[in-house]
Length: 453
Image (spheres, rainbow, N blue to C red):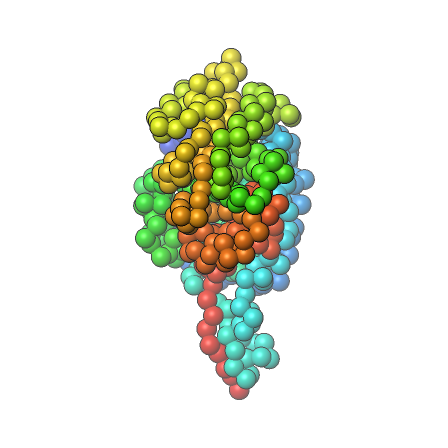
């Protein structure tokens, strides 16, 4: 299968192509890699056009949901696309399918989803009657948005179409490990009524990726610590880095009543999502809790990603060994209940399922609690009031199982905790109207004061 770039003038096939392989090393697709000059010229073209009218954008977004879900795109119907993504990403097929359906649903809901972020004192159009007495008008902070996507879950493509709803033109750089979801979304949007200049698909190397961010007004990037270190200080870039999500159980709670929720938070979505719990802190003796978690996670079988009952991600055997060695090195000083020797589930075809790892800490070592790898791997630690919030900082999600309302107040006030769930809600919970890393529109838009006669 050939995956060409989608530029402002249509398909663009380059001499520089990258072979995309599945987790067993079998070639699946040839991906065109665009040069920096093509990136710069394509984004310059996007700047020269005005957004489509609002009603037309909204209609196209809603139509794209059905196209993404039901149409044959680039020779692939929906199930063929799901199978292809599963093969290259290693994400279990049932999880891939659910994530792809999440993308389809998000496309249809995008016109409404952006509205929840609009300040109550602002209107979308200066022609609104409220502006006669003075109000805010919600306007874009720029014209072109660059997106650097990741490969850990199709759902990463649920959010950025909101920029199209708001009138941005968007340039997407897909992950070279899983380029199919971005391609299908962009094609669906174009078939639904967006112009080629409105939304681009630009596979690029690192130099081309940097050019995208330089050329665009704003950017969204996904990635690990290296991405955070590279772009974290740039106010034009919204960084989606490691989640480092956590669960906190305080002493008055019986953790046994929440064991299924804790295990689900760790292992749901193959443990690959930024919302998966990588640390569990308990105000008491953590050993029985860690042992119970390990006992349940050890029951998950190592199966090929294409098996409908598979729950664990797969990787090429070499990458699996490298991940196991990394975890073994980081686990030094902890008690390994399911250690690195448990991680590799060799499938015999050049790939391996990544089985869960569970480690017990006597004290909340912040560096270990924030270790995140692309499979179910959790660090279970004691926590006390004297430890305070330090072990809980820098978390995308914290599920706090507690009756302590002051602790909830403190966690909500902590700037480095992005989302807080209280009680019986897994860390991977999401809803269309809830922010993820804030509302995306908070980053894309601003309010201008406006009054007219």
